[in-house]
Image (tube, rainbow, N blue to C red):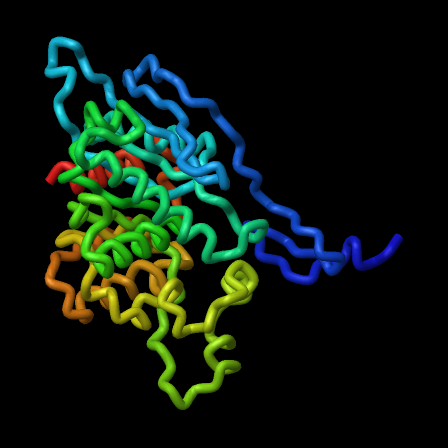
Length: 312
């Protein structure tokens, strides 16, 4: 047997492994759960295709009683992360707790679709949501129940990075399709590689050396540690973030706590952005603990905290 077929070139456990023969093994393969009507919470969900190139979304609608203003408008939450059982469960629970309409975005994943594909997909999805601002968009649930004057962006880990990127782009373009600003940005355990950007005297090799190998693999076009997609301190557009409120959730044992959430929070505060940022830290917990132990006391409290952020 050719040894290259079993020799590992790069091991990015618990995400992916790349073998010397070019084969890619995903260590965690997201499962698929179909949309449904949750008998316990009354939350309904359905899937929609945004573009034929592979961008889709799952829309979640809370239990709306006919006797309780069936056409009342609710805040809209755009949540960035691909479909799976754990995200279906989490977003559904958040919709029930916060009483919002949610659009969970299914974007194309790296390495099959190298970055910045996911960034473009997520902005395309936001533009699709914004197309409902006059009540005549392609999706009835958003037309009938979504308040496009109260739009929130959120995500966890890589999804939080993507949510920030979309918020920055909205601010830089002074709104999108009738949505001038968003009401808030909720980032849970965000994935950034926080470092002060290198000066113009630094070489390309030095900039590349200061980012992780996983990022280099997923984003072949990166310029290294000065890439604003991975380093918010390198992005002059941060000060024009398209909202006045940001919540950043971090966990004590999360490996992304300092280079991710804490660095982002401090960068935002020093950027000249005029909004209010709140840092919420959970002691003794690890990355994305709320997804894997959703019924734990701390995870339930965190869910209520995110819902409160959406309802302020």
